[in-house]
Image 1 (cartoon, rainbow, N blue to C red):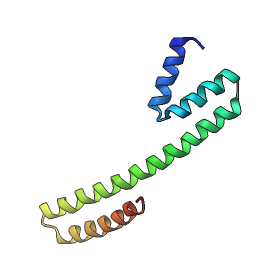
Image 2: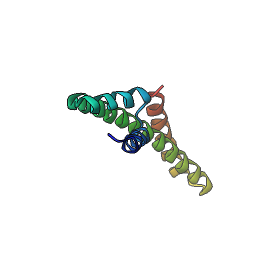
Image 3: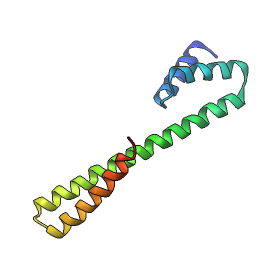
Length: 99
């Protein structure tokens, strides 16, 4: 692997969220032609990304519920406010599960 190609590969790996240790493992895997190691490395990253995406979805749901709550208050709509309050409580409970 040429230096420029290696740097480009590392930049892409970093952009995908891989840490330094994983990038080192990638380079070793490529150098040794260890395809199984690379499959495992990227499989583990997919799992981490799925977990991050799920966490972001929970945070997004909470924030959207707050938008709904405050919009109901702006619109002076008690029924919408009650529904948004229930949604906010449920979203907050999901969010608390992260910590």
